Length: 458
Image (tube, rainbow, N blue to C red; front, side, top):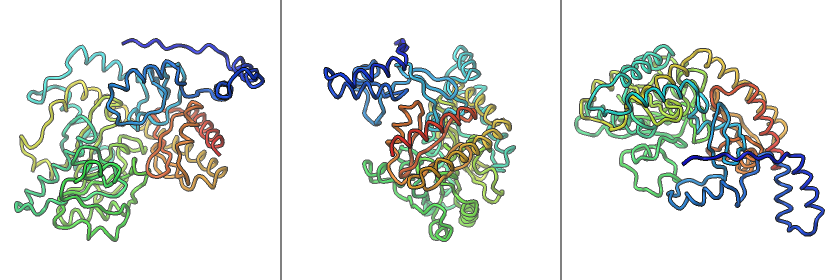
């Protein structure tokens, strides 16, 4: 189906003139007057109920299982840090597909790789070798070692998503536990409150959020939950029965909460004491989003994990995930222990190879840090203007959060109708995960819109 994007040719000056006339006329209903005034005052008002977007949504929604509540715009084009909707409205995107489009939308180099590989080979299954599964695995291991992260990274399992990457990590941990203790006693798995590890039953069981778990309870047995950054509770939480521990160095969905270095170091020490596999879920915070390849790259070796899970930015929008393991884990996994039909296909792996090559560039990582400073400085200014609304600024690099004292939904809507896309997380938190290629000018422009949006909701 081809979409023709209609261009809105009505200049804003004329709209504002109409607004003035409508307000003065008694022949128009109040709803019509309000609609015209709204159109005049907002650069990107949400598509109306009689718009092409609404018509398309109405036609398609009856066939789509309702698992998401979406706003009215229908996006049809992306380039760099921008998206365009069916009415040709332009939006500055500070969401990057939920930290996925690290290289921005429609990256030209990636488009070329897709075109070339699409004419070469898409899929042949894991029953056979192909050039790109191994090439991607090698690149991930080498770049991880170069970055100062996970010093003993050894091998990689390639799959299709973050949830699958975490499922693999959970299974690998259970297998290690069985090898270390054939009685089966070493089977418990630990995760932390406010975490998010996926929606499949294993990863969901490691996500202690009633909103996600209750509709599908009971969860898998053997999962225990602890408090993030609580060093004093680690020894009672992680025991001789623990086969694996999974933690996000920065909790994304949970509110952009950053684990302290001391907590991660203590957690790793305890895992080594009891022989538990330590997993860092870097699906959202990894691949240079913090300014280093992995969010834990700055930690000492004794705080490094046995497994890193990654996805999201790995494919820049193409489905792929991976589970990077050390030899302590890999030597206990045997042929037939795990598998995937689509995971590791040459199309996904070649794309990810390109993406990792770009995202591991030191210049890009330096720029992430400098851009983060611009965000933080402007956040502090906005916080100074609205101290009763913004209580805290959290995060690292370009995974940042503003903690609000009230529901951020009105701010999200006001920003969207002014041409800026932002999302929420945790409890009353605004989340900012723009493309890592976002320019300083785009940051300044977007945060000006954010401030206007906040002011409009006060």
